[in-house]
Structure formats: C-alpha cells, structure tokens
Length: 257
Image (cartoon, rainbow, N blue to C red; front, top):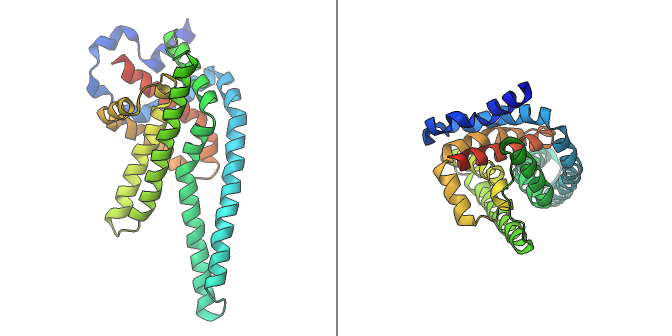
C-alpha cells in the first residue's frame, strides 16, 4: 500500500486532477520531473538494465567521434600555423578552441544520437513507465504505424541536428549570440526527451511541435538539467536514463490535462 502511495505522489493523485489547471505545467513543473524520475527509477531497476547496452554503445560512438574530429582539426591547425615563437602560442590556443568546439558539438548531439540509435529500447522504457503509472499503455501496434513513428523521429533528429549547426554560427555573435544559443539548446534538448512518448504513439511532427509550444515553459524546465549535464563528461552518460523517464513523465502530465 505504501508503494502505491509513493507512485501516486510521483504522478500526482488522479483524485485531484480535475482541480489542477494548465498553469501548473510551468518551468518548475518541468524541473520537478527530474527528481520524480530518479525516485521512480529506484522502484524500477529493470529500466536501467534495458538502457545499459545502448548507453555503452552511444558512449563508444561519442568517444570515436571526438577522437576523429579533434584529430582532423588538430592536424589542420598544425599544417596551417607555424610552431615557432608567437605562432606556437597561437597554435596552442587554436588547438584548445578546437577541442572546445568539438566538445560543445558532441554535447549537443550526444542525446540526439542516443535517442535515435536506441529508439526501440527507449520506447520500451517509456512504455514501462506509462504502464507503471497509469496501468495501461497507449502505443501503436501495427508495423506500419511503428515505422512511421521511427521515420518521424529520425526526421525530427535531423531537424534538431541542423539547428545545432546553426547555433554554432549564431553563438559567435557578440553578447546576444551565446544567449540565443543557450536558450534554444535548452528548449531543443527538453523537446527531444519530451517527445519520446510521441514517437511511439506515432504523433505527427506538427502535433509534437504544437504540444511543446503550448507547454514551452515546462519543456524548458526539463531542458535545463539536460543541457547542464551534457556539458559535463560522464554526467551526460549517467543521467540519460533519468531524462528519458523525466520526459515520459512530463508528456504523460500533458496528456492528462
């Protein structure tokens, strides 16, 4: 009985749902989905086992991408800039800048690569969370519907990835550029995890964008911890399962309203 009470606290007691307004789903609500997800994962350790192998594969791909991209940039800098005197100092500075650019790019793409490569596993985790909290699962079962959901999620990842490239260019604009890049990154990362449920339910991209726009404050509340974790090596790796569950919680909250 105590266990059921804890789950009700995590998902909000259905008995009081009619009394809650859409204004409840604000920025703080989005932030709160992360500790709620941590608490839920403590009661569902099987979810972590499902995500372990995809997580390791994504980490290996990320490490290989860093090694390859930074090595290419480093070789280009060595060939383009002399190594003596002040030129040598400039070469060192450019190498550090190149490493920072690569880390930023990978921090942006790490979550997207993970969600794309692990689409089916992430969907299974999302289903487990929904079943645990609501007692039922609402997902497309037809193969054609599942394929549409996957294709739409791939298209969504391509759009967000292209946005990341654009933000790299915007970020070099003095003062306003970094602010726009950070805010857009927060919104995009929160959106990516918020729409995990939408993918397995085969919602169209327009429907996903509409939901996210309506609850943008909550989506950005979810996106803040994701963005901060992505900037810290290993933290992004360890916390991705938490964010998958948190995104599912937020989407289910939106559905209930």
